[in-house]
Amino acid sequence: MLSIERREKIKEILLTKKNVTVAEMAELFSVSTETIRRDFELLSNEGFLIKTYGGASLSFRKNITVPQKIKSFVMREEKQRMAKQAVQLIHPNDCIFLDHSTTVFALCEFLSDIPLTVMTNSLPVMEAVSQYRNIQLCVPSGDFDQKSQAFFGIETIKYLKQHCFDKSFISCTSLDMVYGIHDSEDMIAELHRSILECTDNACLIADHTKFDRSAFVRTSPIESVDILITDEKVSEDWRTHLKEYEIHIIESEK
Image (cartoon, rainbow, N blue to C red; front, top):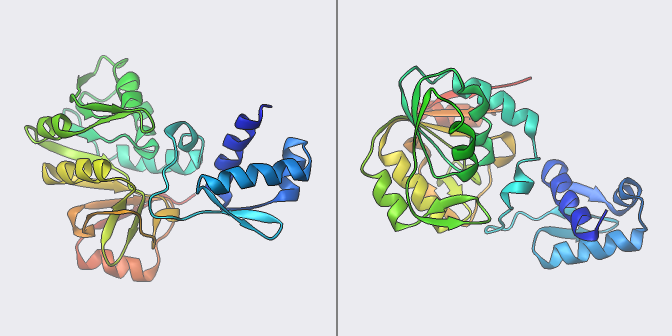
């Protein structure tokens, strides 16, 4: 395995486990502990991890972003469970919006038999649903972001605001009880704000790791969404908080 491939794999593992040791990574990749320490040093310089005694932990810096190709391998089972819950909210002939997140992308495989109009800014979603004869695909223009594999910008927002959706499905970087929904970048937050303004039913899909954290951009208050889909049972504090704003909770537990 090339060193760059090994470091990408370490990122995947950290996104799932949050903490790893030098010894376990050295054993996993059959390399020396010095090699792993050098990997940790490079990833630390990227701001991806924080070196600890004998290991490393995932960095929760406000503006850290992860390429889509890495995110797509993380928490696959949880994304599948949440997608199965989300698809039950979709009715034949709905007009829906699907954002660029890998969490929302998991919905695509469950849409092959439902007649729908789908708009998305995500290139992977476009490629997936364009194969389905039952789906009318609408694609906004804009500037393509390689890291997110999606379109953003003034033209994208302008096109979005000319439409209204029965349901929209978005994810986020994190959410907390004070400021609500957070994203890692301004362009993503602006897209999500526009979607939330032009949908009848806004569905936020967020796994348990995104709760009680903040990120670089405050996107929207939690009351901007109608439904929250997550992969574990929420805490009583969160249940009370969401009930206050009449947000329906769907917990896709194992």
